[in-house]
Image 1: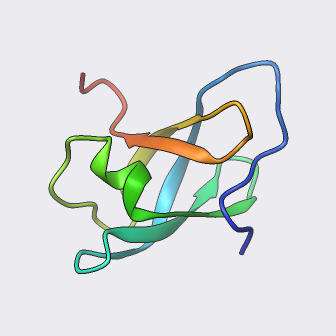
Image 2: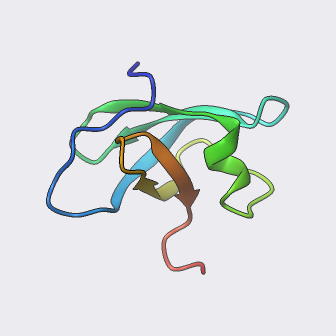
Length: 78
């Protein structure tokens, strides 16, 4: 899996599906809608305000300026 970096694209938010999540380390991986695997660290999860992610759950990710995952969110939940 890629180490949490994205190629910059026209839109700043992307959607995907949770593939793995470890509640103890608060990190995991997801598959973007285009099939690209991506990992995220505890910082991205902590910024979400969430308590847990489930396998198969749809998420939106926000990349930072460097292309790393800045935040993992649930679509439609502010």
